[in-house]
Amino acid sequence: FFFLPCPPLLWSSRRTAHLGDMDDRDNEEQHVFVAEEVQSIIEKVCKACLAEQGFLHSKIGQWTATIVENCLKELSAINKPFKYVVTTTLTQKTGASVQTATSQYWDVVNDGYVTYKYENDQMQCLTTVYGISI
Image 1: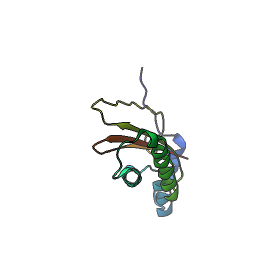
Image 2 (image 1 turned 180 degrees about the horizontal axis):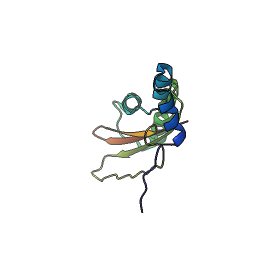
Image 3 (image 1 turned 120 degrees about the horizontal axis):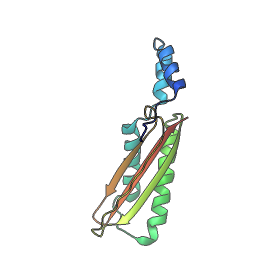
Image 4 (image 1 turned 60 degrees about the vertical axis):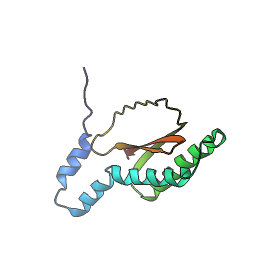
């Protein structure tokens, strides 16, 4: 059997109890993962780090650390009540495929993730950000 997770009852009751209050709606919006906002951050960070770069195996560790750290720095600056997980994979473009899979058990209304693919003629970078509302 496969069960889809339901949003926590606390969230549902809080949401319906205060629909008339604008401040509460704004507060609820703070707890929603906005994929477009997160994707623009990932795109900006990846392009800033990897633009005009050729593949150098010796730089992969530095580039991946820079992308992860700068994504977390930018995400914390938007000041939303989320815990974030950032992963990034850099590979040389050789014609081989890269396949990934992910599975989450979370609040499907508030939590979310975004995957962004940056590539140039020599490498590809796959960065994923998971946002879990706290």
